[in-house]
Image 1 (cartoon, rainbow, N blue to C red):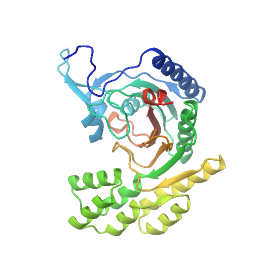
Image 2 (cartoon, one colour):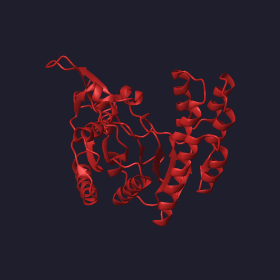
Image 3 (tube, rainbow, N blue to C red):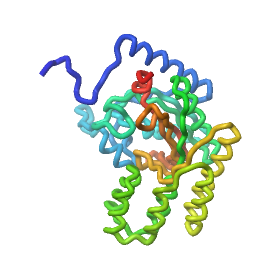
Image 4 (cartoon, helix red, strand yellow):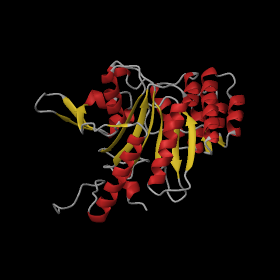
Length: 317
């Protein structure tokens, strides 16, 4: 073994690459702080219970080890959002709070979003507002972030996981089945959905099949409202998307609506969104709602935000 070789999935920036990254990092921090988002630098290591929250996906991607000083289990952060939830809970107030960060994270394996196991996660999060205007604010900031990185022709795709959740709640599925179904939707696999429907008794099988195909412009939302008229929670979720669509159109921003969209982490509870560009094979940035994420810290708050891999995107142009 050559001692200078890095572990698989671990990379570094040097020379002009590092300089370009640093210049963009500074510009992003200026952008976020000018918009009222306060900079935070969470620790690399925390107690595992603080890092995992309710997400099995975060759990699977977190490096864990025993702390010789305390005898407690610690973890290296694989996602910054749980740490922001802890920081926000410490403030223990009902005010709207805005946070931004640019931190290296470490994951046990790369996923469909990050390019390596050692991305540098940049993002912004807004706590304390359930209003759809908060989602619009962070979507705008996500677009501005990518524009600052000289990425143009951005396509914004928006969905709402509450529609999928409303359907699942009507079914008699155990945890394994529900996870499998969520995995099928996350990977947009119509063949796998057909197999799942054939092998399981679903009350609303036809609606799951319809949901998988609901994608398009704002007219898609009207179609969805008709399909899910008997599901109050789903109708509320669709109405939120209609409100967001109206606000975005007033700002001259066009979006597409993908109602089968689910995010990597299970803590998302409502609106989710991703940014795409035809020159890239996967989402450049993504985010959404995770209301109540701070409940385990004693502060259940509305929250929305986004993130992306600055290390990857800083070298892509």
